[in-house]
Figure 1: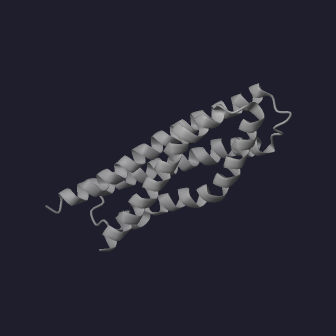
Figure 2 (figure 1 turned 90 degrees about the vertical axis):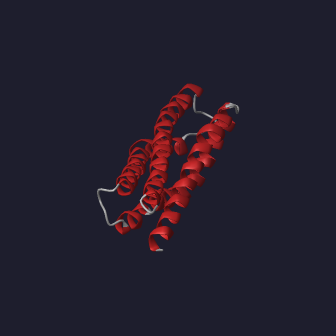
Length: 159
């Protein structure tokens, strides 16, 4: 029963994080690119401030949610464990990219003056951020898929 609860929490947190990141990747940030320059800068700053408060807890929680799942699996060589561990590594890599790449760009974005920042400077900053965000989404989607495969592999052994 503890393993089922741990898996539920893990899939809930990783699914919610992955869905949120995917939605911002395909919906939110492309829509902000359509705004006039000053509004775009102000909007990105507002989104960055809001996400800056919630995402550290959300990302860390998703990664930590793998720990009870993996610790409750008795066979470390099982597909269930290996898929779960690989999924956790995807999310850990995503967090490393966030900490070393996206957060410095976020800090710079918050320092910008919307009235004096050139369009070229801002779009160059956003292009770098978007490339990193694309890589992070690939890792999130892969990690979530691996977490699901971990559940499916363990249910195959129960038949």
